[in-house]
Structures are given as structure tokens and as C-alpha cells.
Length: 156
Length: 163
Image (cartoon, rainbow over all chains, first blue to last red; front, side, top):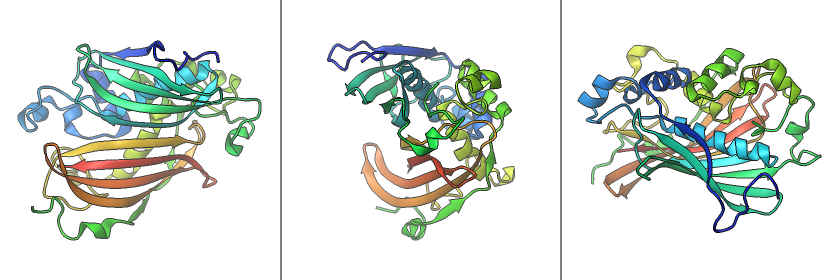
């Protein structure tokens, strides 16, 4: 197949995205998602009440970044993201460098699965997930994506 | 062991919440993309999106969170908990720590500007168990993101942890 690395043991890691979120970016994401949890934008509360060392990067923000990695890989295949499961495994703090990475864990030409994670500089993973992709063909598999003018999800 | 939840939490299983439709706009999509640092033109430029067959600018895949968190939580600011969160959708708890558990999202089609998305949320389970660092409460949800024709665009299975 083309566009995705082979699902072999030594498949290359997909390094598609890096971010070092600052307080402004955390505030913007919290505001647009209406995530009002203070630990993402109120340092006084976060340190004084929650006893956390710094502002916390929202879990859905890390999930959204991993989805961008999956969408980019899917578009290059070409295919689309059918599903994505993830969970946050450790806390990521503001100003930390986050690397969104992944590798192919299976593929059969029609479907592929990517293992994705967010990694800190010390190697700690703060978010892990699996994205399942479906290869795009001439005839879209789902009626709703076959409608004129509506392209498949994951085609970014 | 005292329960983490107050009252009969199992009575919450099967509760359904349906929010008013969420109108997706190009401005909203641009804000979300900017907040992530995503720069792809299809999130900002209608012409670029249309060249790829979309009717309008396309939301990044993670945008569904905007729909899930925004509309249901539009409550009076004085009703929020001290930490800024709202607990309208979970059994009353004796604890204050909330965390996201595992999330599974299935995508049927993309979200684009002009969509009006109705969020249907159902509590599918409430349980307590012993976690690695003590008692843990788990509230499980199913979310359906429905378009104006009531077709499901996205389906999400989500759990919220209480400790």
C-alpha cells in the first residue's frame, strides 16, 4: 500500500505534530470548547486549591491533536478516519513540549489501524489511542458520505 | 466502604439529556483550529473546502468536543462548582475530583459550517470500583451527534471518573 508505512515491527514512527502549549493557547482552547475547569487557565486556583504545579493541558486537546495526526495519515493513504479511541494516562502541563506520534499496527489494504500517543521529552506518554482508518475507494462505503457535496470525515 | 455517590446512583442509568441544536459556524471552526495551531486552509477558506467537495469549511475531527461541552453546559455561572465544572449529568458525589476516562468516537461524516447538531446523551452505567489509588466512581455515557435530518454524524462512548 502507499501513503502509510508498512505494519511491520520496524515500521517508522509517524511524527506529525509537535506543540508546546502556553497559557494563551490553553485559554483559547478552553474558551472555544467551553471547558470551564479552572485547572486549564487559572494558575492561582490550580496551585493553591488543587495543589498542582502548573496549568493542565486539557485531555480533549491532546485527543484532538492525535486526531490531526490520524487525519493527515488517512488523507495521504488515501482514506478516512472511521473511529478513534483514547485515554489520558498522565497529566501534561503548560509549556511542556508534546510530541504527537504514531505507528501502523495493522493494515490489509482496506483498513488500517494506527497506534497514537502524546509523548513528553522524557519519554512519558500522557495520552494513548488507536485510530481505525478505511481506505477511500471510488464508491464511498457509507450512504451519507456519498451525498453530493459531502466529503468523507477524516479527509483533512 | 462509603459510597462515592450520594443516594441511589443507579437510578441515573438510562437518563437521557437532549440539548438544543448547536449551530456550527465558520467562525467557531476557525477558533477551534487556531486554538490547536492547525493551519489547513479547509478550516478557514470556503473555496478551498469546496474544491475538495465539502459544502463549507470543515471542522477538525476533534471539534465534536465543542458540541459536547458547550450547549449542555450553558448554565448560569453562579451554578458552576468552585472548580468551574458543572455536574448536571452525573449522580451527586461526595468527592470533587473529576477526570475523563476512555473515549471512543466513531465518525460517520464530517462536521462543516452550517450544520445544526443535536446532542443526545444517555447515561449507560454507574459503578464503583477499587482503583490503584483508592475508590473510583465511573459514569458511562453514550452520545449521539445528530444532524438536522436526525442522521447520526458521530457516535461517542465516554466515561467520567470520580475520585
